[in-house]
Amino acid sequence: MPALRTFALCRQISTLSTVNLNKTINSFIGNGNLEEARKLFDQSPNLTNIVSWNSLIAGYFRYNNFRQAEYLFDQMPHRDVVSWNTMLSGYRNANNPDKVYKCFLHMNRYGDMRPNELTFSVAISSFLHLDFKHLIPQLHGLVLCLGISLNVFVGSALMRGYIDLDDYRGLARVFDEILDKDVTPWNVLILGYMKFGCTSEAQRAFDMMPRRNFFTWSTLINGYIENRKLNEARSFFDKMSEKDVVSWTAMIRGYVQYGDFMKALKLFKLMLNSGTRPNHFTFSTVLDACAGHSSVLLGNQVHACILKSGFPLDVVLLTSLVDMYAKCGDIEVAFCIFELIPARNLVAWNSIIGGYARHGLAERAIQEFEEMLKSGIRPDEITFINLVYACDHGGLVKEGERIFNSMVTDYGLKAEMEHYACMVDLYGRAGQLEKAEKLIKGMPFKPDVVVWGAFLGACGLHSCLELGEFAANGLYTLEHDHPAVYAVLSKIYGDKGVCSDITGLDKLLKKWRTTKQKAGSWIESPSSIN
DNA sequence: ATAGGGTTAG
Image (tube, rainbow, N blue to C red):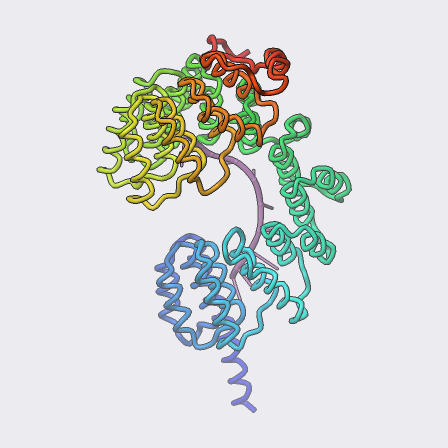
């Protein structure tokens, strides 16, 4: 009897100490003191239980010490479902879906462990926006087979999966099946409807949901922006009670995206007056607006605003400045700022090369390209669009041809529509119409309006009747009343003294005169934000 | 001890 009592007492003491040990370890981890936590853990091997192991593993993941987390996991005498989930969630937060996948397989194959809701919520959410997303319906099947209920976490993750897979019905079905929906599944539903372009369904969900939070409003507004409904977006944006930097920036960005630069800049001014402080996302977006508006005056004001705000000029911000000055016509200032960028990345190089290209400074564009290669940055498709564009506008036919070919042979990049359009323009301007024709005929996809337009323009420039008709025909198949068709053809016919054999060309010409596209200077007169 | 939504650069 006394022996039994002693045993019970010991047990109680040891249980208490284990709880205390866990508490102490956790408080060390909470303070970021992993070393102390580990020391304590190692010093009391007979007091550690599975909770302390799991805590330490989670702690190592939190501070990105994957090696130690994996080491401890391997050393564990027993693992429970929390141990596995901790590993999955650690890998998920480290953006390592590959390891999530392997760990999930391992858990089910050898772990003799039944996955729970948390397992699925973590696994599914790691597979979003990736090739792994095709596993998501299978995981859904497994959830059903195991009789696991669709709680808000699993449900929301699954909904996002179906959005990813463009499965409208999957999305709606999962939403219906979620038990005790809180605000998140509703938000995801709005997100999905907006992604599918169903703005009125999204609006209806917004109207009928029982509770809304900040994300609900953001999701609705961003959805309207995505669907080009700027007025709706703005009207909800104005009704939003607590706007933060992100919502302001998203709204400003929306205007920039659709070319309404002045509205973007005015909204930026409202933002400053509202007391919300811009961050580098905002500044970068606003500089984009200045660039689009081609107003170096506004750009200067924003530049001054950035300097005054004491905001650190990082690569992104400096690149936006380079782009802004280049697009506003001040390529020399753009270059000065470019030289200030300490660690130039691909986008920074592309900006300056693009700037030179737009200014017709082909040699300098190519020179910067060489520098870029020397610094070990690999060019991408955009780099080559800029380079070919530079050669096009600088009249460097041979060089353009060489660069275009090296893109494919030396860098393994695929020529896209814009590359072809530039090359056609390049050959066309130089009068090498046959080469342009050959390029068009050899394209792996159907030429678009820009390609045909460039070719047709070249035919007009060099008054080539036969190819001009070929080009006009190509353009006509895409757009029946493209004004360039009649303009260019009538010029060629005039030059060649050929009678129009297109029925009603004169009538069409008259129509063209009335619908002629408005031309405007790229550089607008400076104006202030008001 | 492990879990979920919105914004950058060409």
